[in-house]
Amino acid sequence: MNEKTGEQNVLRDVAALGVGLRTTLREMFQPQVTLSYPEEKKPRSARYRGRHYLRRYDNGLERCIGCELCAANCPVGCILVIAAENSEEHRVSPGERYAKVYEINMLRCIFCGYCEEACPVQAIVLGPEYELSEVSRERSIYTKPMLLEPDPGPHPDQQEPIRVGG
Amino acid sequence: MRSTVFLVPPDPFGVYSNPIGHWLVVVIAMVMLVFVLLTATAYTVYYERRVLGFIQNRPGPNRVGPLGLLQLAADGLKIAFKESFAPVGVDPLLYVLAPGIIVVAAFLSWAVIPIGLSDSFTYWIANLNIGILFVFAVGSMSAYATLLGGWSSNNKYSLLGGLRAAAQLISYEMALGLSLVPIFMITGSLRLQDIASYSVQLGPYHGPLPLIVVAPVSFVIYFISAVAETNRTPFDLPEAEQELIGGYLTEYSGLKFLCFYLGEYINMITTSALAVLIFFAGWHPTFGFLPAILTFAVKVVLVLFIYIWLRATLPRLRYDMLMRLGWKFLLPLAIANVVVTAVIVVAVS
Image (cartoon, rainbow over all chains, first blue to last red; front, side, top):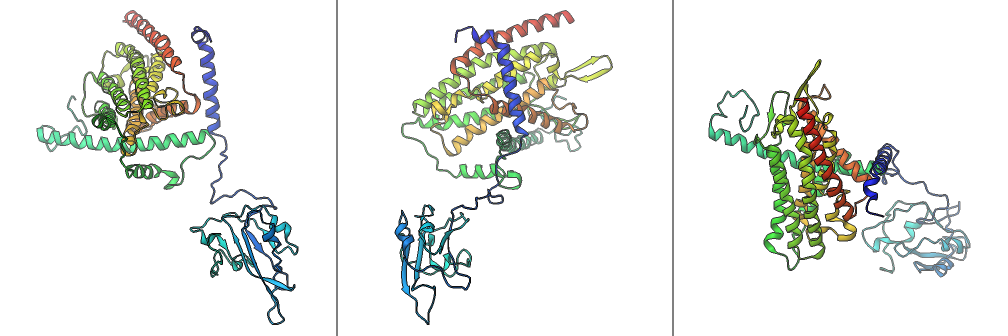
């Protein structure tokens, strides 16, 4: 830019200034794009992958058969399943076995949904909830009562997680 | 009408005639003014953040208190409880002195600024006949604060910021002073109250005249220079974040940082109040129905809006552009303005 450009084009610069000021003033009266988060929430897709649930059959039996395919398929290893045998007196799921322990470490989970895909009986599904913050690492390990439908609320009587921090 | 404080003209208790009572009133008035100014500063920051938010299609701070009105109280408390940290190698005296200077200088200007409480009562602490020169003299002291703060911080970014601030303040001080010379020639006074009350007899109209009608060029020069004087965008080179981290503010934190910010915002209100007094007839009724004090406040708020509007619109000037605008455009324009006004004033009289 040569030295004189500044003085020669004063009028053009002032006009440009006016255009800029008009733009900002107009934007002031445009609708805001902000969502006031805790009160307003962004709509989520029907396939949104959030917090996990363990589903039941309509007759109340748990779907999970303790096969551990979800744990085997989990890329970050955040699922722990310990299976136990069903018996005639104590039948939890229709299959041979059921999950005696089912834990998901929500701090480790990357919500990829591979557990859901691996499950042969559609027992584990990812729901729409995404507000999963906790005050300690231990509380982020969701145990079976917390995961099992019907959802008993955010903190049912806490069953001590078997793992700590892992 | 030339008493130092003129709050209530009838004096049933003899307060004004008593020297001790007089001083008492002055001290109370000063304390009140400091509180009013501090509150005004806090809400100027709030106002700025809200307006910037609206311009950027977002709400701005709206969580703390109703409409976010207590946001600045929360911010102030937070910053006041920060550790008072000084880096190694600072000049211990000047490092602490610089934020003090800027706050003192900023508050001092308000000693001579008249505030019309109603149409007949005017409030000021010192009714100097050179009021406006006093404001400029005191306002220039903030150059010392930025320069000393930058120099004493033992940081090259601070030093560069301080140097830029000093150069910028000196450059624009000239245009700022010269822009108001036509006003002095028209009104024949340097006393702010006289300038604000400047009245004309124009046909059927008799009353105070907003001087922007007769001196629009002066207002443009004054406003550009005032934005530069207060280091506001687009002239905020002394604290250019991208190149100088924070300029002279880099090594300041906690209350000392707050002092610099306070000084900047009080200066902003001061220059706005001056613009209102000089160019927009001060507290004299322009909107017709509002009481004098509200008229004044509304006008100041409107001028402050221009500051914020400019900040939201314009990017920062490059250093050579800043100097070119100051020395090669504003200063010649201001001198031409003085000459032309002088010719017209002589011709009319």
